[in-house]
Image (tube, rainbow, N blue to C red; front, side):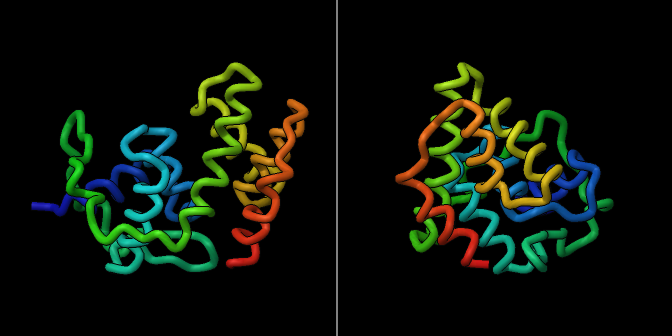
Length: 161
């Protein structure tokens, strides 16, 4: 029987069709795209998966630490709460909150749902080869949203790598 975390990882990578994705894309897919977890829990789960070797991290990208082709994903799969209820980490809470705050502000101002906002941000991030947080700020500028209170947090996130 495959572990639930292996199924989650396999699901994300098979869904994306990619062999590697950015750390932030992985946890944001869990939270914003799939709405399986709140962003903080998704980020903590992703960090835990890296720590346990289920995900391998190199240069801000993650890859599965096992062969996903052998993992069977049950029809209608949705992870249980036990999948992320391990060792919550408070150290990067401000990093998590900054992206969530930016997305919420853009969603409110643009009258779009968070998932569509996130998709636009991912597109900008990929097209311009910039971090997801910077892409969010760039996208927010299109709506004349002020982020003065968040720049310092975004800068901390960028300099952490």
